[in-house]
Image: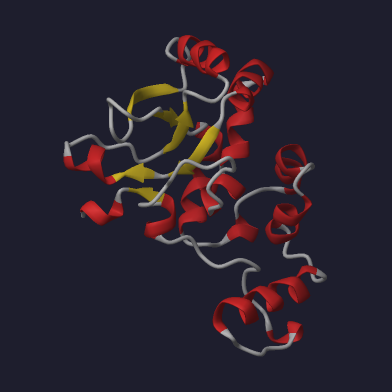
Length: 193
């Protein structure tokens, strides 16, 4: 996530796919206000903050573009600072020229185990079926990974072929149906390590 640039789509990483939905646990008002801001990326940390001595180990870092839907951004900023999930916020990147703002949000305690399991790429062990149905009903592809859907193996084989040029059969796959998260894709500013 070192090169998060001005874009109109959210940076596609595993935190966005498998963890962001858990914030809906904070209620509909929270979820609605968060959905109204333009999220650029979601991650598990930021090297800049870590180097300054701050530890946020059970948090999501949500990078927002304040220029897109500015009215909603201001509503979110006002709302989140009073919310129990709020931990911190700061300007991200060039303060004078940029419009990115980072929010550090506490991950819901009831899903701490899922958060830790995620780090190992054990997606099928993250949630109970009821939680998958609750958080991922609109995201069938993510849901298929989380339940290790047999039919999704064919899709995953295609992904592996495109990424690595390997030829394997779907019946040869016994592990997870997505690649594990990497520090480079889940942590902001890893180039500053």
